[in-house]
Length: 196
Image 1: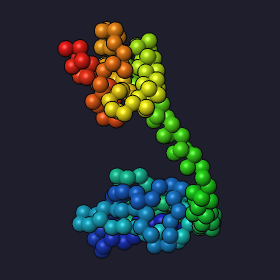
Image 2: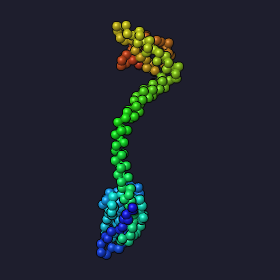
Image 3: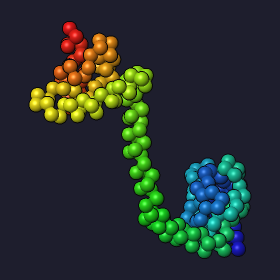
Image 4: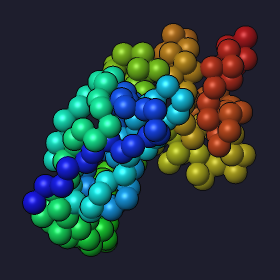
């Protein structure tokens, strides 16, 4: 059963009010005495409360309309109050069940591999075309194998793309040039110093 929401008396000399702002939309659940709309008079702004708990099913007047005191401006369906209450109780109950599932975790787990793939993709363009990138990628593996038994630890464990280009230009091998970069990386500057 729908209950009418009427414009309350706002004062002895006031016979009309202007609909200000609707605080609740059609379909929203409302509690008894909860403000659902603001009405404006020449002197003040008043909040009109819901006469009963339920669901706001109709807004008879729109914002900016002028209505008389006692006019119906909205309707609240009390029959839907129980349905709204049960729905609001089910929603929090459903939230923990979905939140408790590891559904969110698998989404975050694939992210690191994707980031690693992007990092690998960034490394290839940095090394120029793929023909140049391939030797650079192959060199660290062989360099590492050779560098491990060497006591001086100055052989390159990985070759930076710019350094590989210089090595190719001068016909040098990464094993010939002492590496000074972090972690035994062979830098462009190392090759330039060696060539000079």
